Length: 362
Image 1 (cartoon, rainbow, N blue to C red):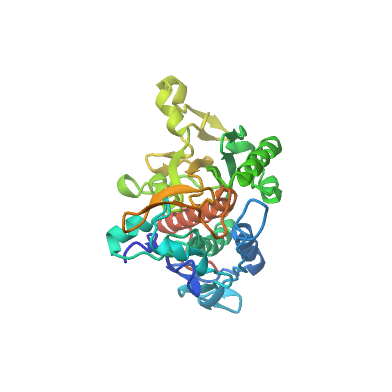
Image 2 (cartoon, helix red, strand yellow):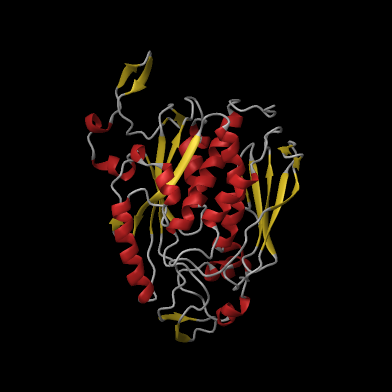
């Protein structure tokens, strides 16, 4: 099976299934000499892990990465960072009936078409359980970027039809961290909770949008043509389970604007040239401009719902299907740290490519 490795110089390979003994990863190309803050890493894992909040799956995993390579005396060695994350609360029996019937909008049908087989136990490799690996690796990349003045804040910008109208520049990372729904807008969050409560009572789900702002990236990061910075960010985000769309800067809104409205004229600020506005979202020609980079990722509604749906099985038999097991009403709040992690891996990778981060940071 191809497609399990991501990155150019900083490469993450993930492995494992949702209801297997463990998921895990190998992060190769990470610089040597970085002291690892395990408490910060576990904070990142805590934000993604299941079993917290009234709108999340009740599956309860510790999500404690066990490093077996790449760290010695608390610092990275330059060797591959290999780690395991044990699955201790899997219940494969919940998915027994899925052996014969395809869950609507899940990957099972497509996996059967490609491999002649699919892991019905929670989705196997296509499960969001795999994102725990990304968050662990991304937490390391975030610590690396922090040494060079780069911060990344992802947040809930929309759930269902409830939208926060805060601009990326106004997003406060402390408010996001303290918010149960990872929303920086308390008024919007209150409406989101009402919406989710109603959907939970109906055994239904909804989607939403995760926004992200990256601050402190120097100008000149990214490669032209096929390895453009926004192209790698788009690939990273669209590789996340349930992601359905990506836009950066003004995104799709730019399509309805005039050039005079969308252009970012330059002016001198504090002794250097800077764009007076940032409709471009911090990237031009695939290369960073030194301004804040911001983008949005749209996520579809959670596919596994208890509400009865008509579906067909492998034999063609049609029946009403209610999905058992433990599932989120909306994946967006738990997707926030995943978006953050994937953004960190992309930026760290391109910082290494550009030589802005050395291979040895001692």
